Image 1: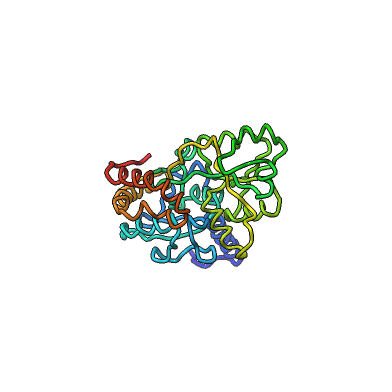
Image 2: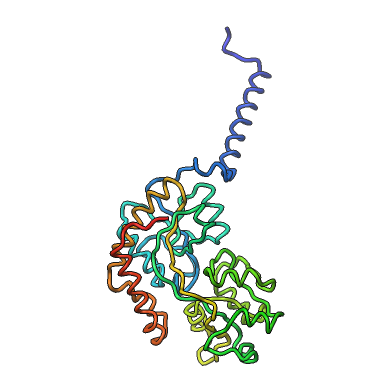
Length: 318
């Protein structure tokens, strides 16, 4: 049989080969369906850490992810994360800055993604493993100073339930995909005047609040203090943070990773490193740089108790 093809047959074969190559190329670019995510295996020794532009929890240079562990900032969480990752040299650590919805998409597409600032919820346990990392402080109600004064709200504390009844027209705006704790979350969900939006960083909401785009938000007082410290010196603070009566014990912050075989193996190593770091006396004071002296004195015993128990306790992976 002759190995030479008729020009038309040769052209048809060439077109078929090109179509096949293009089909494969487009197929590889498509997102992985949610039902197929368990079959996507990230590189075993690479961890991609999702950071958040959220000072002073994270202090990112120009809001960008660092290139290495050593370049992590001196915020509460990134400074703590650096201590942990220095005990995991067997991994290559990469860093990204993704919104909550984008992080979910990347995780489902097979990216080996971990976070150092997660709140554990029953819904999130379906997608991620969690291990307790460090305590948090409680979030406050944040309002314009003048508006809070006009409503007679003081530093002793504010009841969200009472505020909703007395001022039903107040509009609130909070961060989408942030968990506000088991006591506050239901109060936010039950109000028709509280909306959640995706924002690149917490400071965006605080700027919107200053501009009068809404009446209140919820934020950590240290985040508000850092935000106000970046403003013109001598200017009276336009925003105030007020404790919320219904808020219970501050929730614990967790490390989390994909809920698959890769994530489980990584979490075992992370849990061990977290217990070792918890034994370091200075970690209980990572918050204090960002608290007032009275706040630091109040929070210190709780921080010390948590880290002492974490250092002595066994494996804690959910």
